[in-house]
Amino acid sequence: MKEENEIEKLVPVLKDAATRDRAFGKLMQLTKHSLYWHIRKIVLVHDDADDVLQNTYIKVWKSIENFKGDCQLFTWMYRIATNEALTFLAQQRMRSVNLPLDYEDLMISRMEADPYFDGDAVQKKFQEAIMSLPEKQRMVFNMRYFDEMEYKQIAEITGTSEGALKASYHIAAEKIKKFLTE
Amino acid sequence: MMENIFDDNQKKTPFEVPEGYFENFEERMMARIKEDEEQKEERQQIVLNSQKRRKSSWIIGAAATVAVIVIGAYAFVNIQNDITNQAARIAEVATEDDYYDQVNEMLESEEIEEALAQINFEE
Image 1: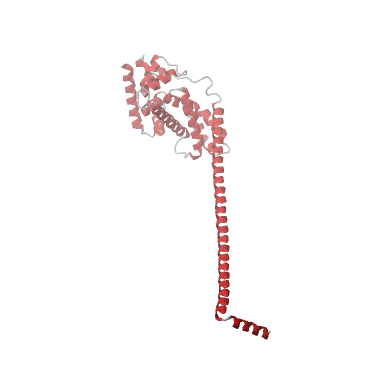
Image 2 (image 1 turned 60 degrees about the horizontal axis):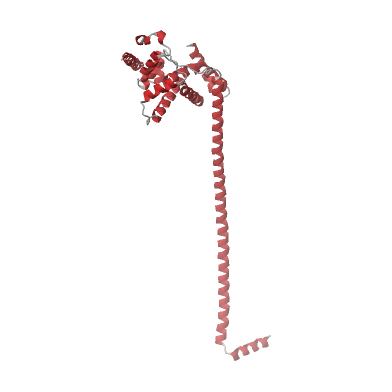
């Protein structure tokens, strides 16, 4: 909460061209970890997460002048990161159309081949279960389960009602349990 | 083991980052942003230059067209004047010749001599 307040305080200095560079450095310092892990859980591979994170910050830099303040800056950035990650996955899916492998299997094999994946058999199986969920459901599950975000904040990021999110999380958790016990 | 996966103590992602990845991230990112901006400025300059070039070549083209039209019109008017003058002169010459021919036809040679003598006489 303290961190989010600090981020909000940066809005006026970010909008001022004279102070933007310094304020943006501070903004990255405060948000890089959360945004990176949010993206990484969606795209799974470090190099991809790094690319998406950089693209996210470039988008934020370019659009910060037009930030209207109708939501928190951090929520707005999370939304950009989410869109960037989902766009990346959609492009990757398009490129893999001609491969003799299901997209989900391809993602899992890429994750395993990533030198920065260090999971045991249980964690690998858990990731496979998460991967079996539809993209948006997977994202909601990650934000709620790993990041322990409030439904209110997830609703702001995804533009979905809290009720729908609770239902989505419940269904996702049930699917994962079923996948793991099969 | 699988049943306990939802326990809080199991909430650990199996992902790692390269050592030092987050260190100096801000500096690296700012350098990339500045590089992107410089490239954007260069692209804009190229577009601006080509627009200027297009504009100046358009102006040169327009000036050349106007010059051709003016020179052409001037030459046309001059040629027209020459033709008119020449035609008038031809007409004039033709009229003079006709006059002498008619006079020649009307007067016999003796009469001409007589007339010439009269002229001399009057002088």
